[in-house]
Image (tube, rainbow, N blue to C red):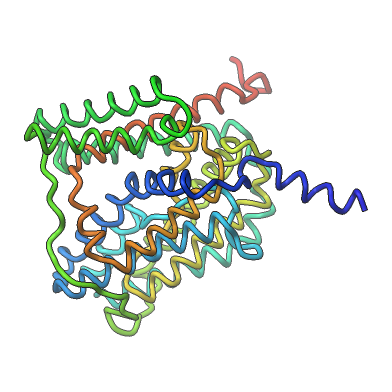
Length: 382
């Protein structure tokens, strides 16, 4: 009897499985939502602008993306059977995947782009049995490099929120981002307990107040009114063209390396012994299934994000129920589109400043993983 019940008791004692009181869960979950909200909202408006979608269709797509982000966070955090890593993960529309989706839509039509998303998600599911057999062979050095590259790449993404896509930043945007970073760091250093755990949220709130009171930025909710629900196949029946879909097919395979690095990093962050051969396929299956649903509702591939890992390391909150709470909030926001439009009005420099802190933490964690890698083997020295 002891041998049967001990593993369950051990799992329940892990910080990642710890239940969080509601009074703490809500602000901690809201912190995740506020940090990530800029990505899905900006992605939707990019797609809508490129494809010249009418306001009603844009609102419906925004609702779809936020609902999928919420469903993905719930699936990854809670897990169902062998789907979802049961780790504190959130999910976002992939930036590179969106660019490829739009390129296919412009060259071959939106229906072909939809078919390409479905093919890419199906390919990801198909290769998982083979990938499961080889993922455990990846050395720590590869994992550390992957995590470091993820952090550096995401720092560049966050920086563009401050500088703008063309890199021509205004001094006031840089100042506002710097003040947001300073407020976040000050909250983390000076505060204790739950206040310290919400340091990113406090930094964003402080940055927004500074922006509104000093003129360094503006709170401008996105245009539109009313509510909108997801629309099935908004671009019509999907068309399947393997040649047109090739860029997304290749991209779906490359995401496996990123998924592996993020899964190992997240496991270490929450104090769980990394088990890539078990957890990576579960994370990838959730990505693929949510992407399949996204393809049916007009989005590009959905990917598990590293944003919440940095928040977890910074705040010390390891419970997967916090990101599950963020998933619930995203579903609510997705159904209440006026709320999502209001959140989209946060100054980009404030969001960028907060994201810079989070992604810098991820880059540092990659360096720490490299520091633990054994470089004394054959060929390590010349």
